[in-house]
Image (cartoon, rainbow, N blue to C red; front, side):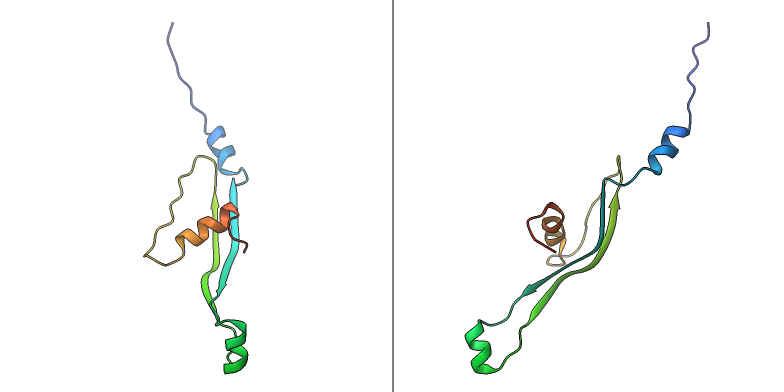
Length: 89
């Protein structure tokens, strides 16, 4: 009696067509870095915003490993906090 192992590409193909576990599309987050309201009124300054994250798209499927890599201050932690809901987009 021979011991045979048959493999099939069907499970791998089915897994690749599954919906992603996480899909992020057009992720944006701006922080208000304006002077306090009274200072803006007295000095006639407009509000100022810091663009922390703008237009991030990615998907994570079952079994995939995902890493977010970049320089210090480029928005990695902001993306993570947005994804888990600590910040609102």
